[in-house]
Length: 189
Image 1 (cartoon, rainbow, N blue to C red):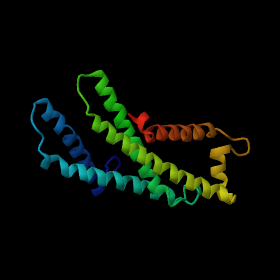
Image 2: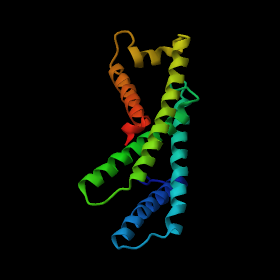
Image 3: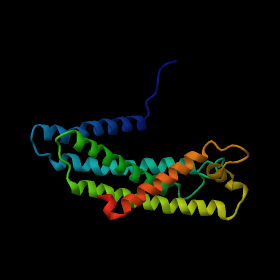
Image 4: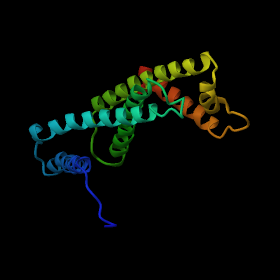
C-alpha cells in the first residue's frame, strides 16, 4: 500500500491548533473592520494556549538538540532557557518592526504604551540572553578541553576553517548593540 499515509494523533492535534490559530488571528481584525468590540471570552483562552504552545515547542526543540552527544557545544543545560530568551527577544523585536511599518505606512495609530511594552520585553529578554551567552562562553573557554573545539571553531576558527567566525561575531555585536539601545531609556523612545 504505497502512497497511503497514516495520520497520527499528534498530526491531528497540530492541525486543529494550527487551524484554530488562523481562525482566531482573524477574529479581532474582522471585528475591528466591522466596528465591533471583540469578546474576550472568545480569544483570551487561545492567547494563553498559544503562549503555552510556544514555550513547549521551544523547550522540546532545545532538549532534542541538547541531547545530541555528537555536538558538545549544544550539550548545555542553558539551551532551553536561551531558546526562550532569544525567542522572546526576536519575536517582540519583529512585532516592533511590523507595528512601526504599519504606523508609518497607514493611518492606523499604534499606542505608544504598546511600543514601550514591547521594547521593554525585548530589552529584558536580550539581557537575559546575553547573560546566558556569557555563561556558556565562560564554561567553554575557562578549561580548554576537546569539548571546547566546537566553540573555538565558532569564535576563532579551527585549523584554517573559519567560515562561521564572521557570522558569530556579527551576531554577537548586533545582539549587544540592540540590547544596549533598548536598555538605555532615552534611545529606546
